Every structure is written in structure tokens, then in C-alpha cells.
Image (cartoon, rainbow, N blue to C red):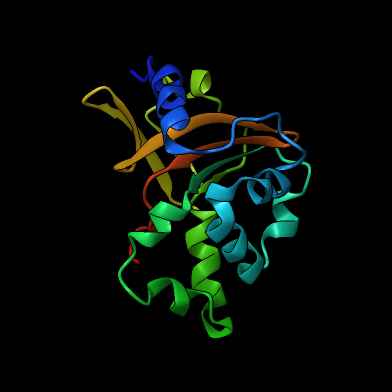
Length: 161
């Protein structure tokens, strides 16, 4: 089903400005080293999840780029980053993480995967583009020592949020 997931996403990643250099370390370090993930890195820190993504893993992170965070309604990100909203931010970010390594090849025959938040993500191809819950994968297979990152163009919201 997602046979072109990796090739298409890699081509889009070249255009999308996501770093493709060799991974410097774990998922948290890899995200922090990529300019396109500065907002995600800030959100992970605010939610207290950086340490978790430095752990053994394996993890797959469907990582919203800075441009994805910019698509949120005005004030949403600032509100989520407040200490009193930490639980909601954690829930949203955990909805982007699967507790196994799912590179593009692994995903091509999958329809969904359970996230650390507890709900499932749906995978599809629409118009030749790899999608996760309607968000487009703009770069796949960013390798890290404890998993893989797939950059996406929207922030995913768990059901009910």
C-alpha cells in the first residue's frame, strides 16, 4: 500500500529542508540538530519528554516540522507550552511516537500503528503522497541510534483533542 512511501518522502525531504546528514545520536539529539525541528525540540523540553526519547527505544517519531507548528491556530503553541498545559502537550507529543522502529519499508504494508498516547495512527497514500492521519510525510527515514524520525507537515491531534 505504501510502496512508494520511502522514495517519495525522501524526494520531498530534499525539497523540504530537513537535514539528511548522518544521525548524531538518539532521537532527541537528532531532532535538536535539525533546524526544521527547533519547535518540536522546544515542545519536547516543555513536556519533559526529551529524556524519554534519549532512552533505549526503539521509537518511531512522526515529527512535525517548524512549518507544521506554524499552521496551528494563532496562540495555540504558546498556550500548550505553558506549565499548566504540560499534560495536554505530553499527550499530543506522545501521539506522534510509536514504541517500535518503523522505517518506510516497515510501514508500506501497515494500515495503522498504536502510539505511546494510546490511540492509533493511520497510514495511507493519497495522490502518490505518503500520509499519516492526513499529514504528509515530507522526509522519511531520518535515522537515530534508538529509532527513526519521519518529518510531517502538520501537528497530529489525538482523538478528542
